Amino acid sequence: MKPKKLIISLLIANITITSAANNIAHAQRYEKPTILKASQLLPASLLKGPHHKVAERVTSDGYFNNYTIESKFGNMTVEGRELLEIRVGEMSALAELDKLACTDVFADAAYKSGKGIVMAPVKLVEKTAKVVSDPQKMADTLSAIPDGAERLFSWAYRKGKSAAQAVSDAVSSDSEAKDKEKKADSDQSNKTSTSDAIDQGTNFGLRYIGYTKRQREWFRRLQVNPYTSNETLRDEIMRVAGIETAVGTAFKFVPGLGLLGELATFNTWYERAEKLSLYEDPDTISKKNQKELLALGVSEELAKKFQSNKAYTPWSRRFISASLTALGPKVTGHSEFIRAACEATNEPSTLYFVSIGEAFEKLHAVTPIKKLTASMYLPAAVTSSGVLYVPLPVDYLFWTEEVAGIFRDFEKRVLKPNNAKRAHVNIFGRASPMALDNLRGMGVEVAGS
Image 1 (cartoon, helix red, strand yellow):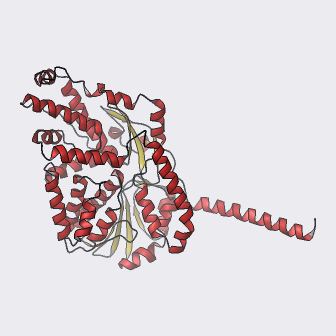
Image 2 (cartoon, rainbow, N blue to C red):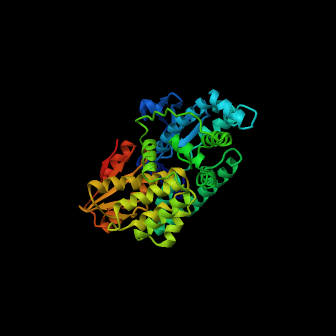
Image 3 (tube, rainbow, N blue to C red):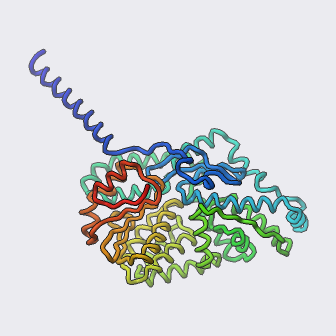
């Protein structure tokens, strides 16, 4: 072989070896979410109850788990343990409505209402059967990974990049975004998006709950959220309330709801709902929110932007404003929190901010908070003792390239600007060994399993 050809061959070989080595190194620095098992993640009563069971196969986007609930009321895939707990709790309400539909008092009321027919029990509702009648459609739904809070973290990742990094990733990011848009368009004919469902829930609340006392009372009696995106539950309550209204007398029926102790989110939501009078007119709730946010120093423009974000419901907005009000106006940075919260685009990401607000409220009751910050483009708090508290209400944190990017230059970008002496990250769920090692390698105290 001629010297020139030999040199070229050696250069090509060297480039190939170097490229392969870089790929291996890159793979070792980050990890991809793996398939998880529900039996290893959930307590027994949440895994299976009298009205449901959770499928063993659990997927993850690196932050939140995607659970499949199987029940006689239909199958559904939900993102995040909080939404899982809410849906499982709602099964109790559906079971009570199912029980009512099978009673003589309901049959008699339906007849007296002039309908001339006995309405079918929940388990026989035609649309519920349609949901599980197409195996391929169900398989496609179950294999998909919802994009709930993933968008929120992607936003934080992009914001945290330097200008040079942002430019270098612009083409690939744009391509990924377009691919997701195409997939979303193709899936649109098969399912309703979470945000659309929430819009329907909000419209439902504005149209009925604010103005119909009897319907509002049924939601309260069953201890469920009138703005739920669970269409089956909303329809059944409307059906029962409509018949009761037509009859003109109340059913002699008292729900025997037994809420499970493990459903922390479900139980907390309805305890707070009673405390904050959240079964009243939604317009009244909105006015309270606006007043509280302005009192905390949030500008009128930003407060209105938060109030008009359709991903939130009157309940989730009220929870956030109430938590911030509990911190008080002496704590600075309320506007930073609301600005970050405005980035929520769907139900899982709104629950994320509700959880963080509640975490701050609990922390403040024990260790006073001095300021709120969004240095990572996700909310954190600095205590009076100089500790940066970072709550991460996620199900399972994997050390993906995106997570690493959010925590990149943590000390320089987050700790120093906030004059924090040390940082404490509280992972509500679990974290992979690699995620824990990397966070602790940054000198961060980590709580989480």
